[in-house]
Length: 227
Ligand code: SF4
Image 1 (cartoon, rainbow, N blue to C red):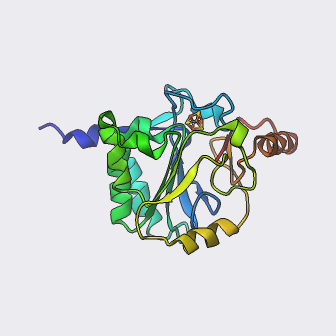
Image 2: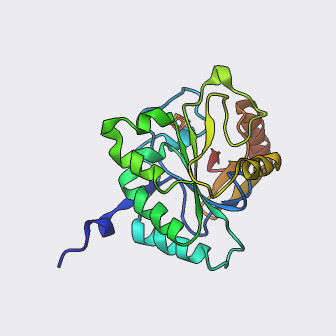
């Protein structure tokens, strides 16, 4: 008996899955943050996450494993979690496998925040049906390429002023988002696989400074990701 196609789906992640990365700096509330590996059409030569560009990098994780972690996240065993934020890499490059995970997370009551280097209009072009389906299960979309000339370190949750934080559902009001964005902070996490993540910094100079200070204070960090 063959399994339904969906069971064979995998996502390529730029990080290990367990324990899940949880931060307060990547959207409203405390969130499970997933970095997807691979960006087929880099939007900038100054990407803050160069380690996530290689579509063959990272590790493949089965959809069932990811669903299981979502189930565990909502039990509260890692504390209260508001939602899931998907960054990259370019998440839409893996739209077909990502959609069932986001649908499942949403059915559990988690809110969904999605990043893409593509502007919203790109999703509505006829060839992008799989990416467009992601919007059906997304509460907040941060869209558009990072443009260094428009970089603004005072922005929250995005790096350049062309990028927009868009409410796609009524789960959050504008004032909810404004209140969440007013909370400033940076989360640095060192994981058991040696990866250090920095969430909440959007400015390249600040990221470089943080990288250098971490390199001084920690023995040869294996990898860094920022979002
Ligand atoms: S910012 Fe996102 S879309 Fe742009 S190059 Fe980096 S990973 Fe790719």
